[in-house]
Image (cartoon, rainbow, N blue to C red):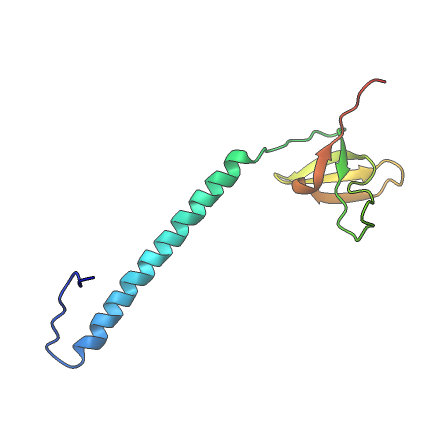
Length: 116
């Protein structure tokens, strides 16, 4: 592979200035590439991600984070949505114990009721 450009050094100190100039260019290029790849990854993720919206009164299941047995329940009993606190956070209330908890939308699954 042949070098693309010939660097002529007139003084011994020119080497250091050339290296600094090249390194700054490399750093800018790396920052640009990282930002570009992050934007692409976000677009790919957002394309497949649904943006669920829950309304007050909706029943939802909450994913449990605590240690549980291997075949234990993954989601806890139905909670009722009280209000939306942030675009991705909801205040929910346990119907049995009336305990309220703020939950991120990634831990929420809707309850589908069916007639039997």
